[in-house]
Amino acid sequence: MAKIEIRNVSKDFENNNGTILHAVKNVSLTVNDGEVVVIIGPSGSGKSTLLRTVNGLETAQSGSILIDGIDIMDKDTDIRQVREEVGMVFQSFNLFPHLSVLDNITLAPMKVRKMSRNEAEDKAMDLLAMVGLADKAHQKPTQLSGGQQQRVAIVRALAMEPKAMLFDEPTSALDPEMIKEVLDVMLKLAKSGMTMLLVTHEMGFARAAADKVVFMADGEVVESGTPEEMFANPKTQRAKDFLNHIL
Image (cartoon, rainbow, N blue to C red; front, side, top):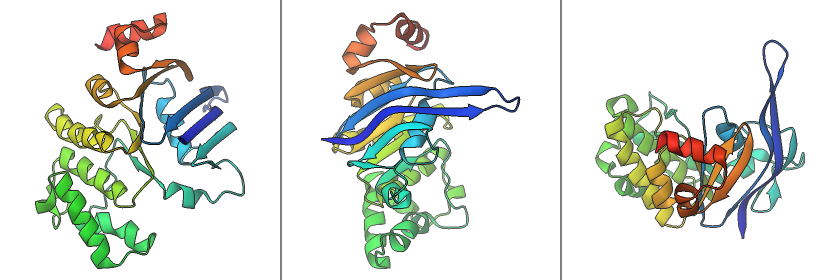
């Protein structure tokens, strides 16, 4: 069953000089329940813009985006309610610096999901233990490394019990030695059956975790396939050139 269905989505931006940038051009993409789909491609190819349309951070000009069969582009859809079901982790951690790690995680479940403090804190501690950060619960984000902060950001999204998770280049702001600890958490999440759609430059993760790899360039899906197909035998010259450059 399709958890996320992107149908013929296009998104344009107007530059300062009045010219139109076609960031996403008529893209269709399906992420089935429990599937991990990784989007790769050069900078400026529309990957992050496409991802941001899935939870309404960007509004597409045309097409439809369905989450569990609900079209978020339908004017009658409560986008806030749908967004609660889809967790998102960004390049920057976006943690509240004045709150403890535990308070960062429990704030939304208590406010939005109406969980009791005890229930929210129990869930938060279980998730922190899963990512190896139970001992950091009462520290402030500024006391943590970048990799630790990004793991907290993942836990914060998971605490809302999302039906799917979106990741927008979650390791791009990290020092190299911190990347593995975040990717290990994401790999564990992928193997647990979480539905995931992510943009990343980490080809090792794509090989290890993805069910499907999608290559985008110039706002379009150029080709897609299993990791084995994409990395061993890409069909298009554009994908071959990109992979030869980064692998």
